[in-house]
Length: 151
Figure 1: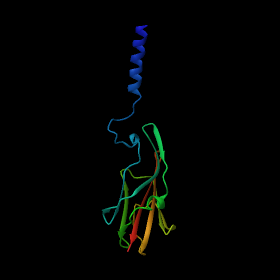
Figure 2: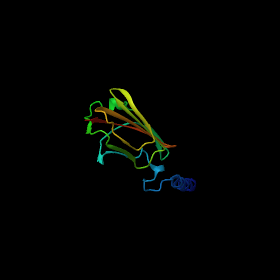
Figure 3: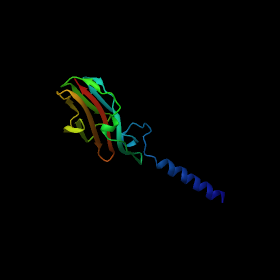
Figure 4: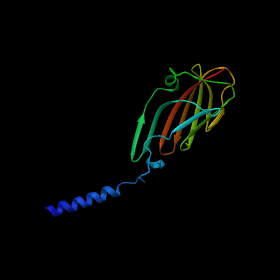
C-alpha cells in the first residue's frame, strides 16, 4: 500500500513539473496575464489616460473586464491643455496587430484612424475625447481613453 502511494506521489510530482511552460521570467508575451502597458505622449510629455474594457489570455487563463465607454471614462477627468497640430504618440510594450483611434467632439465622431500610432491634435479649438482600441492576435484587446482641450 505504501509502495503504491509512493509511486503515485512521484508520478504526480513529475507531472506537475512537466506541466509548466513558463520561462520563469514572466516577461514573455505568452506569459502575460494582462495587456501590455501603454504610453501616450503629446509633444513628448506623458499624458494620463483611463483604461477601459479589455479581454486578455495568457498563462492558460483568460479574463475580460468590462468598463464604460470613452466619454463616460473621461467625464470627471480634466482635459490636457494643448495647442492645435501638436504631435500625439501612442505606444505599447508590445506593438498591437491593430489599432483604432476614434476622436469625439461634443459626443459625435470627429475623426477615425486605423493603425496610426502618431498623429496631430485637431487644429480647431474645443474639447476632444480619444477612444483608443488596440488588438493583439490570439491574445486579446484593450481600450483606453483620454481627453484634451485644444486652445
